[in-house]
Image 1 (cartoon, rainbow, N blue to C red):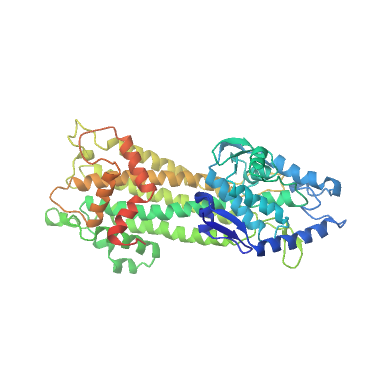
Image 2: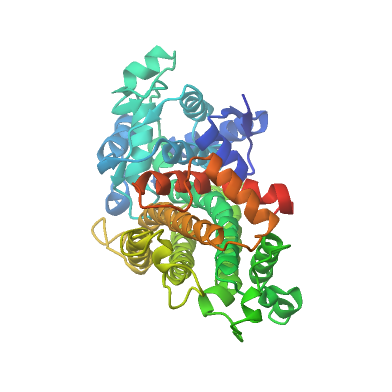
Length: 512
């Protein structure tokens, strides 16, 4: 099994994906263990002094004015975890919780938090045992960290609360730790706070969304090309020299992908022989511009994620010169903004895909295709309601594009009077990614059926490869009406697991 070694300088997106989705093992580097021990010495020295230090010998948030005596400090750290483990609602997905814990471990290993090495090692042991704390949907405002989600994870390290074992069964966390020979952590000064104070949940979901969207944007380029082909559109608008005069890199990449898919097609431009069209509709002609803008948004979001993956987010933080200083680095605004930006781009990409699907189904705009791509229109309804489903998805995606980060609800007696709502932005982006997958699948289903209905014309080699792979995946072609939901579900899986892009790339080589 792949092992990810966590040092002091952060982790990569591929590390997060390996641990969260593939179950990779986690190890602490010698450098990290040394840094943990060194910063702990600083915290212990401060704890022994009479002067109050936030998070070490004081209360938290609006209660930070109270100095806590040494005999109550262990209780203080336990209490912050217990009281902050106040999430409600459905359980969060296993991969999100694993990403959350791994990224908190990344920050602990930076040596900037002041926790003991054994705390970090216990977190690694829990990940390696396949134990996943139960984390709930609601409880984070995206400021002072993803507090409730991280608290539920910290609670499990203490042997309290509930967790899911590697067998998928939920049991008391203490029982699971004991079954795997893991000793529950007894928290000391600052450690409870350090386990809670990070943007790890929203960052983990950003990293996973970026990976999913990288595949989906290539998939959308493919389905846009198939729709252009099915509509007998012109591929001249995809010429590199046209996109060079407006040098957005994402636009050029999308146009190049579409052009690669369409190479050798006997359908593109065919309309010019008998029913000339000067130019295609925007949803066809401007596909690279819309998808390209989304691709450039991904690039920006990836830069933010890389910076955050290299960060050590905690409050207070142990600086290299030995100072322990309060700060505001836990505020989720940088991550929240790009999560919302991606949701906007997702909604627009889905919207233009739906418009192409509708054009394929409308006999007045499809340039010779049967109404709704039906076998016997009137007797058969064809894909009429598949487009309804796609439209419903697009409508929801537009609602999900409303930014969470534009909202703020003050908390903690107005001490935490401006919050990012980054966790909420991340949760709705996950829903949006699923919705976009389904929208692309419907366009794929319609476009491939339309291509097959163009009898006497030969589609591009890449299109033929898609058709072959799609039919082998159990997705049916043209014909009389049938129960459509299973076909659409199979098309969704075909897009989601990457087989659509794989089929194309076997012909074209790697897409951009």
